[in-house]
Every structure is written in C-alpha cells, then in structure tokens.
Length: 265
Image 1: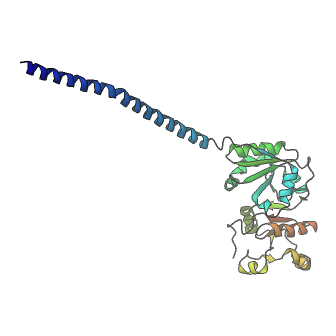
Image 2: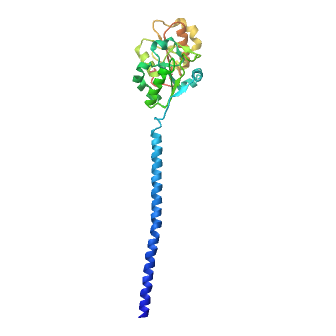
C-alpha cells in the first residue's frame, strides 16, 4: 500500500515538473518571436524608405547656377562642349544678333511645347541662357519639373562678356536632317575626304577648314549653307567663315559620331 502511494506521488511530482518546464519555455519563445517580428518590420521600413528616396530623386533635382567663366571655358574646349547642350531661350532675333558659340535657340514663349524634343537628354547636362538669367531660369525650372536631372542656368549674356559670341545658327541632328531633306540648302561636308567618299548626303560638297579659302570661290551661292562633320567642331569653323562673308550658315552641333539618324549614302 505504501509502495503504491509512493509511486503515485512520484508520478504526480514528475507531471508537475514537466508542466512547469513547459510554462517556463513559453516566455523565451514569445520573446524570440517578438524580436524576429521587430527585425522584419524594421527591415521592411528601411526598404520602403530607400524606395521612397529613389522615387524622389527626380523631385529633389535642382537648377544649378553656372557662372559665365565656367560656361565660357566649356564652350572653348572642343571635347568638353560635347558634354553639354546649351539652349538660348531669347527671341530668334536676339539669338541671330549674337549668342554663345554652340548654343541652339528655343525661345521661352514656345519652350515648353518643344521640351519633348529633348527627351534623349534627360540625364545629360543642359545649360539654359538668356540676357539676364531670368527667362533662362524659368526654362530651367520647366526642365526640372519634367524630370531632367542635370540642369544649369548660366549667367546672362548682358551680365558676362563671353569670349565667343557667334551668329552661326546651331541645330541638333534631327533638325539638320530636316533642313537637308528640304533641298533649300547647299550642304557642306567638313570631314576628311576619306569619310566623305565613304558616305555623305546626296549633293554635299566636301570642304575642310584648311581648304576653305582655296575652294570658297567655287561654292554656289544661290542657297544658304548647312554644314556638318563628325562632332560639330570643323563644321562650326566652316559655318563661321561663311557667316563672316555674309552668308547664312547653319551648323549641325551633333555630328555623324553623335547622331545616327543622318541619311547618308
């Protein structure tokens, strides 16, 4: 009888011990689960924050002010100028009277309607310029609002004496192709003879800057001139020489190495 009671008591003690052990482990498991949930929540929050930061990258883009000295230096460097698109937002008449060397013209009154033409430049350096910086500042703000990420507003042409003020009209590659297609211009290919012989625009005349003086008398003068080359540098030299001789000359600031839409044959 006593033996049976002892066995029963022992069983009861063991059962109580197992129950106590089970209750003691519960808080540990709950703590671990809480820690894991907290870590997961924090990780998700960090990921969301990083995503928000990435999504807001365009929104935080700002117009950078550019001193005249800096733009002047860029425009005088044949390689550096290819990294920037300079847009003069003054009227066509003001632009034609003289503008920064390689600038194209997009008057402020119609600027917004032509922004779509710059879609390929959204992550490239774009510089806006006018007389005082006010109108160009407005244009620069429009670009930033449209998602352009590297926009600079340059010191105006009336506030800084730029080294080269030119009367050569500059256009981008697509616009130059339209001029050629119109058949209203005499096209000059300013590249080397080997490039000219390989492919060029139909009816184009090959004249390099070194040959200009010797070949000038042979050039037809019944139409204005449209000049192109590989990078826009040689063609600018030719166009400038033509303007100095009172001809209308348009330069393709994007040459054959920069614009692949030219219809060369």
